[in-house]
Image (tube, rainbow, N blue to C red; front, side, top):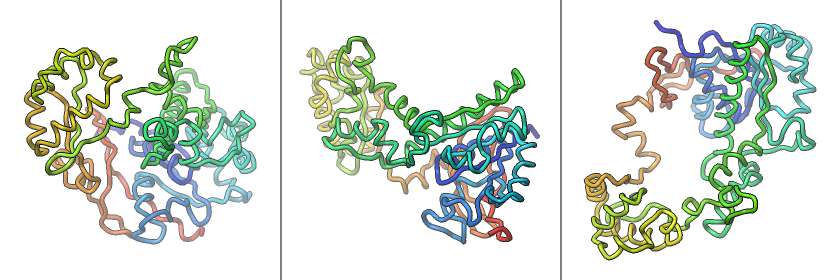
Length: 373
């Protein structure tokens, strides 16, 4: 059997809620030996949302799979000595505990480096650990607000809002995993460990400004901040006769073909639709043409007609329908599993396909160590 991609790495997971556990779940799914260090009573994620058994919530079944768990109170000397023994054998420590608490619990870089000289420490919290705001509390909603994410909804809809997903937690969780692996690669190259800090507000601001810096990219500014296409209030799925559909002619050639299909020959030669820049300026009209095309057809007809000219389109699926989707089923994205305590459940695999070192569901989420509660 081929080894898993990260087999041989040991990660100590001192994280909680979503962001940190998601980061370490990626490392665990990729084959690292992830040991979750839980406080007495367990990670708060064990109690969030529906639960099949005590300490085994739907969230924890996903975020704790392929991990081991041990309960340690790092404020107690005896437990910290056990933790120190683990650090001495680990490659990296990952935590989203705030800096002052890290210092108090011996999770700061200097303390960990004294236990293993080449340790990698990955930390994450709202603001930089090296800033005056290091201990400001933050969660997904507040980071969306602080990073400009909520303001993009104001620019589009007139009022700020939150994304209907814990997007800041998940994006920053992915970046924590990337940062940890990058530091471990550097250590493999030169033998030196290091501390890598992933402040959420900084990283989500950078994430949002990839396209939304827009005109402010230039000095002096050449236009407003905000990407017009993303912020158009008309950019949304449209109602068909029997559902909702997304039709997306993208290139200039796509639009010419689509306008012929939609029997809007009158618009084929107009400057308003000739280029992407012009279409962005007249997005309300462009979207109205798409809406009229969609409204006159069934979802199946829309997909068939758009496919015939090579224009991107898609039906709008409900979350529940994903569980019955033929493509996702053929890919094994949603798997059925049986937990020894929680019973049968559905698990969403990490859908990476390695040609030589395939990954998969190796072990279910560990129950909390009842002897240490």
